[in-house]
Image 1 (cartoon, rainbow, N blue to C red):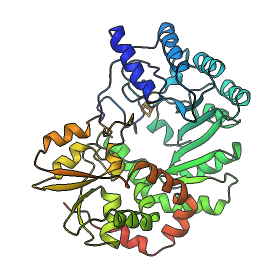
Image 2: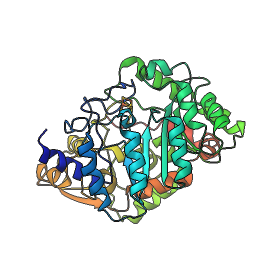
Image 3: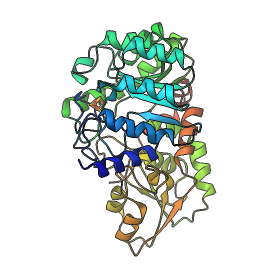
Image 4: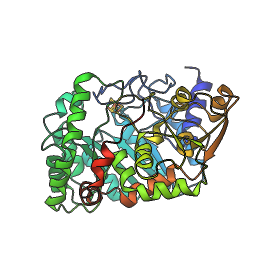
Length: 399
Ligand code: SF4
């Protein structure tokens, strides 16, 4: 790749506070649940394996950024392929150098290729600067099937056994999966945040994996109740299912839409999770235009993950439509969706429709609400314990 273009891609990533390391085009780990394979929803640049020369350029650029409270991210590039960047043979050296030569904080996303002793030593040396999000996925018998090339259970447990890991995510896949993992993880790490729920089947996921994910969803209530009753010492346990979070925050969702001063005939775009809340509890407040997450497909039903293309497919002859701000909070403060399409490009496709943005329906609100009411305890007590959840679950989505 031409050096000028490569540096341009690096700068774009760094503008989003990503540390633009690369392993090359495709991720060698090939997890069956991966949402980021090359068949994915966004186009990426074919950047080569990061060299020492590239790193020197990157570090110099990063050093020129002012230090704020934000974290620089390893893993989760926007314009480059996703992978586990700790597979890069120089990744730990560069992480060391970053921590030594800058005063910036860092967030690491990994499925567990980070060397255990070294990352735990760094966490001790630089307390408070490393936010380490470990994707455990599962430690049980489905691990081989979902992550045939993933790190071993022993490796993952060694990383967990120390001060480095800030949060561990893992999922329900059937009886005694999420529960068994919670007990095992809590046994070696009593402090880290436990982040759990289901893996969502998207259209790129193969049939068997989809069935396994759906089985996990069926067993989620049982798994969650068992964890709730186990009284683990990890104080922060969050569930990640978007429809459950929407239900738990239903009053705030209704209030937010009420505050948008909509007329009954106004068309308001929303995905399945919010549509279910509004059509059950605020019927006819406006004309709710249900938009399926077609770009991601499968069982996805989250407004944050809608794309302009999804919205475009559902518009008919509307003269005016309201769009939640969350759709266009893709990155960099630009009005872009998760696939990279800008709001301006979208508007050009529908010159006869006047689009209004519901600024109050934004991702900082949804993140805030997730941390307020998204706890496993809320799920068990206020969702499963509330008979209304049964009505919510059977709300039919329009065709
Ligand atoms: S390691 Fe991450 S990017 Fe690579 S296949 Fe697994 S989930 Fe996908």
